[in-house]
Amino acid sequence: MPTLTRWFLRSALVYLVVSLLIGVMLAAPHGPTLDVLSPVHIHLFMVGWITQMIFGVAYWMFPRFSSEAPRRSERLGSVTYAGLVMRAIAEPMVTLRYATPWPAILVLSAVLQWLAALAFVVNTWARVKAR
Amino acid sequence: MPRLACWFIRASLAYLLAGFSLGAIMLALKATGHQGMAIRGLVPHVDFLLIGWTVQLTMGVAFWILPRLEGGVSRGAVAPAWLAFVLLNAGVLLVALASVQTLASAETMSSGRLVGRAAEVAAALAFAVHAWRRIRAASVDAQVR
Image (cartoon, rainbow over all chains, first blue to last red):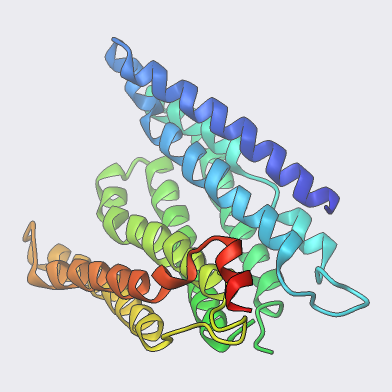
């Protein structure tokens, strides 16, 4: 299993536990302040757990690009691993206290997550080929 | 990888990028204090990523790797799987287009979204028809051989 896949899969497991813990917090009696964690709960699950697990397994198991570069680009793969933690902190902070530097960090996290998707698509596209 | 799996997976990658692009725009709008505008993209954002990306990728990989029939030479009835591909993508696009139309006309529900959702259900059914026979114990495979 490639190193990048191990990072993806282990991080995905951490995100799963954290997102479900937030789910428990949201299910328990709580004040309205905690509701700002609702989008974080959904995105840690959908992006942190499901999407990251898919990225890791696809990077590992999809057909080889070539014998010289079986997984195409290691660098492109590494770019994919960024952005979500920044969002998880900045999104509730923007809702709770709209003040610098949180809006800027949130925009940066949006750009990083978009770049992650782009890098994954670019790296994977040519590995999806008919025999 | 069979041709249909390539179509499923490449389409799912396109939806991943479209969904993340929309999500990034929504997040940037939220960061700049335009929450009301950001929420308008929610329906296509969710549909692109849940149905267009994860469901479609799952169907593509399942079509590729589920056990084959007839001693490992056939993937069974392929037509329902192609139908699922067409219906799923038509459904996601209809839901997205209907959301844009709904925004323009300030309606809360549209027939386009309903038809799109129905197409997604039909796609799921068509794929289930295709995949059902391929989900089986290894011993059955050995008996066939």
